[in-house]
Length: 138
Length: 389
Ligand SMILES: [Zn+2]
Image (cartoon, rainbow over all chains, first blue to last red; front, side, top):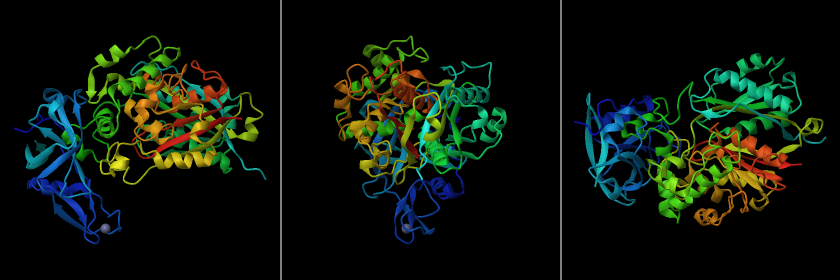
């Protein structure tokens, strides 16, 4: 059973975003890295903002991250999240992979215990139809 | 040859209601009526207007508006990119560019927003750019997206919930003096603020702007023409829009900026350029209308527009600085978007003009220079400085 109910909006990637989600299907969290200069970027972009190369490597993220910022959502702006309230949405960053941050959820925790700097670990949420979504827990 | 300088000569608005309050007329119709009100307020006729400008996905098509208004000739139509009100003062900047370059003689800048007839901004939208990177995580709505910036801001600096409260309470106190404000007859106490339900921590109900129906318009023309019209001449000293690196990514804000830029409104570079173009300093600003979709970003803007140091906005508002009666920088004197109405910043521009005309319901004595900002924490953001000639 997935973390959010089945009527939760699913990823609907555009052409430039599809690569990220293809790796997620295989439970692999990868960020775009420029083939020319190595600069990381996320969300995906078709061109390197540093050197304008369109060459893309996909660099695997480590499973360890920490909370950069977060909010405890207590108001449902979509019916799917009503049974899940309150839930934590966080921006996490990777000490071993500077330059990219990810929007995700911190699960299995009392929302009052979340803080900036909290170490968290990646887990893969099976949302069905072959898709997996990266979430984190302490 | 003297340079053409853009001036604000007319303002017009509909009534403001809670979302869904305007049912008997379309959003397009009340927008057209607001534009006509602004033209008449200036002492002009629709035939004098030859340009239309708006911003950020405005749903009221300028070419169609030109037909409805009966404009004999449309010489300028433009709309600034971005969602929400980020480009509101960018719309003004476009109008000024048109007038000052001679591509138009008089431009109406407008926004009509009946959230009861279209999309409510507080609800989920599948069409936001980058939606796949936020929607599956339940980051659907502007308050939760910007709560992430406010949380980081409160982590880095001594900003407390009482400082957020002060922004909301000031807006409400001003709205209580403004009969056109949606919250005119609804006083708000600190106890009520703190009892307000959480929307997305650290933002409570009263930290979030209203969702309303309404339309606003202003008319811009040359200073030469303005001098012959019926209102006091309000010059647009400067008006610009833009954004810093990486700000455009994500539905409301990128989350990959350097730490120094993350907990900010995206206004630092813009503020510097704005003051330089206007030839004034923060100390010259008598009154400010700061885009208040969420209280926390108003605090950030006070810092970025130079009214206090980085991280000092909490102490600044705690001193009473933003209040009409006691403050050195009264802000959001109509009640702002927290308590007057949420017309994507255009109601803030109209209040700026009222202050310089001396007709605000929370008038700052002898106000001569006013800062108005567009939407904060997005790209592009925008701002303008108005001066009474
Ligand atoms: Zn590169």
